[in-house]
Length: 87
Picture 1 (tube, helix red, strand yellow):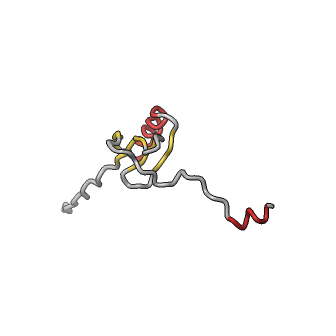
Picture 2 (cartoon, one colour):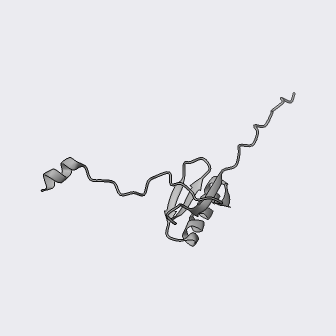
Picture 3 (cartoon, rainbow, N blue to C red):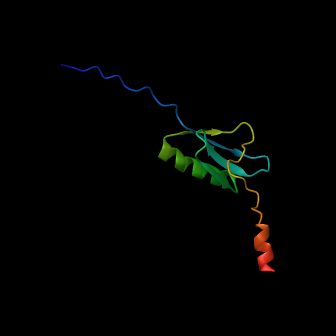
């Protein structure tokens, strides 16, 4: 007797975006908002995206609009109490 096995529908494919933020930094982000990298050049960003594509079986897309970093690249301010102790 054969059982009716219904295959699960395909999961939507992950997309890895390569682009720049408003400050001109090269970023790589995925559509699931779980991956991000910051790079000094387009070539470095593409190299990383290609490696991640193999791992996640994703597609690579060039971002048509500036990417917004998931993690801020602003310097972290030192706590005020640490400055008082250092003096």
